[in-house]
Image 1 (spheres, rainbow, N blue to C red):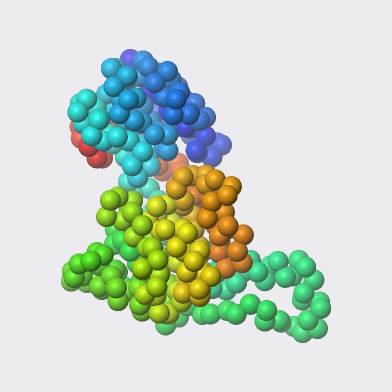
Image 2: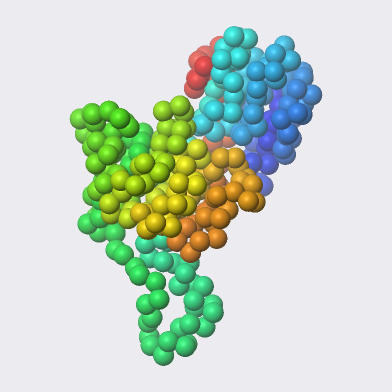
Length: 317
C-alpha cells in the first residue's frame, strides 16, 4: 500500500473533494506544513503532494522511500528538480485545469480597473452620490475597452483564452515575442508591445528568462500608460519598479493576483501597492473557482494513478 502525504491541503477551499487514486493507498493530509516539517511528515511516504510547500534538496536526501513529488498546481519552481532527478524521484504537475478561471480573473481585474468599479463603490458608500446632486457623477475617469491594444506575454492555453475573451470586447490582441529577440511569426517584438499596448497581461511561467521580465527599463518604455495585469507568477514583475512607474505616471493601474513570497511581508512593496486606488491586489485566487479546484484534484488523481501504472503523465523532471 502506497502512503500519500498532502503537505498543504488547506490551499484548497473547504468542501473540495480529494481524489481517489485507483490503487491501494493511505492518504494523509496536513492543512499546512512548514519547510522544517517536511521530512518528518513525509518520512514514510512514497508520494508527496505539494501545492506551494518547498521540497528542497536536503528534504529529498532525507526521504529514501520517496518516489514521486506531485505538484498540485502547474508551476513547480518550489521543487528542487535537479536533486529529484539525481535521486530518481519523479516530479509531476497538473496542467489545463484553470483555462477558464484564470482568464476570467484577469478580465475581472481589467474591467474593475478600467471601469473604476472599486473607487465608485467606495464613493457611493461614502455618500458622494447624494452630495453630487446629479443622476451620475464623474470623480474617476473611465475608459472603454473596444479598440484598445492588449499585449499578452505568454501564448499558451491561458494566453489564448484571454485572447478569445478579448475579441468579444473588441480589443486588438498581440502576443509579445521573447525579450531581446526578434519576434517569431504571429508575435510582435517585445519592445513594440511595451510601447504600443494599452493593457499588458502576463501568462508566462516564472523561470530564469522571465525573472523580473518587467522592471524599470521596461516600464520606462511604456508610452500609452497601460494597465498591467499579473495573474501568472510573482517575480515576473519587479514590484518596486512598478511602484515607481505608477508614481511616475508610466502605468495607469495594476491588477496583481500573485506575489513572491506569498503571502507578502506587511512592509513589502506589494502591500504598499495594495493600498493605492489605482491598484487591485487579490490573494492568488485567479485559479480558485470551485469548479476549477475540483477539476485540478480530479486531474491530480489521474496523474497519481498513471504513476502507479508506470506511465509518464505530466512529468516535468
